[in-house]
Each structure stands twice: as C-alpha cells, then as structure tokens.
Image 1 (tube, rainbow, N blue to C red):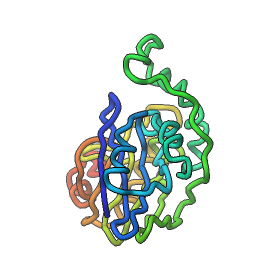
Image 2 (tube, one colour; image 1 turned 30 degrees about the horizontal axis):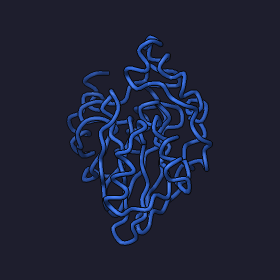
Image 3 (tube, one colour; image 1 turned 180 degrees about the horizontal axis):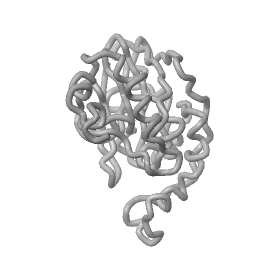
Length: 223
C-alpha cells in the first residue's frame, strides 16, 4: 500500500493518499484544506484518484473537498449519511469552536459550500481501491457518522479522530458522545487485533496493542 501523508491546517491534521501499488488507484482520506499539495502528490506518485473518502465531516477533515473535487471531478465524495448535516454546515463550522468571525480568514477557515456527496458509507461494507479492500466500520462518538477504514491484509486502520496515541477523540462538540465513542473503540476498533497499525487524524502512528495496554482512556485511568 502507498501511504502519502500531508499534514495540513492550523490543527495539524493528517490528510492521506492511500494507493494500490499494482493498479495506481487511490483515495484521498480527509482533505483538510484547499491546497495544491494534494494534486501535486497524486501527480508525483502517478496515482488515479477514484474517491474522496471522508472519515467524518469536521472542518479540518473536509475543508479541501471542494478544491480537490474541482481538480479531480471524476472522484466521488463518500461520507456516512449521519454526518451529512455537519458536512453541509462547513462554512459555519468555525463558530462551533468559538472562533471569532474576524479571525477566520487569517486562520484559513473561510470555506465555500462543499460539493454533493456521491454516495454514503455502509457499516460493514468492503470498499475496493485497486487490490486493496477496506472494511468500513461505523464508529460514532466523535461525530454521529464517523467511520474508520481497515485494510485487513495490510493490518492498517485509518481511524480519523476516534483514537490517538495516548488519547481519544473529543466529544464536547455537537453530536459527540463519550459513551458512544468508547463503545466504538472497544467493540469495533480494538477487536481488529493488537498488531494493527493505527493512523490517526492527528499525531503519531501507534498500534492497537499499545493503546489497549497504555491508553488511559481505555485502561480506566481517566474514567
């Protein structure tokens, strides 16, 4: 699997291109902001973008969808239906974080309305990218429609903002639920296996085994 990581936005969000080495087919997971870096990386790696694959609809994960869709119009936008209201509220999302309107431009938070969703993720489906096969797991808690993408043969999972090295996603924004988030991690993500490498939306890589043993939100230390 080809994994090209671009760290974008004031929130240091990891946008990733995931590509099949044999076919050159790829998806862009969570384009965080309008930037030429994503298209430049696609061209440099010789990848054909088949989809813009969104784990959830917070602004630092979808702020670049419109620009990328213009650059690669054949790529379908995929999102879980439960996050669609949040997705279309993108231009107003900075207000949810209490960021004063006069600061939006300086911080890169002035967003145009995003393009239509091409199709919706289904919990448990397998989504093919060339010879890669991603299992889609609906994992609400951070947002109602959050999903994670697990490639069982590669033993890699792309968890968005559900789980981080030593922490978990915030649940204090509209639609968040601590109970649902922890249930999602314990019931759907951790059972994938201790050897699975975790790629989060922010911060360093980790493994499920390491988080099971040491993450204070999962060991009960912080609960």
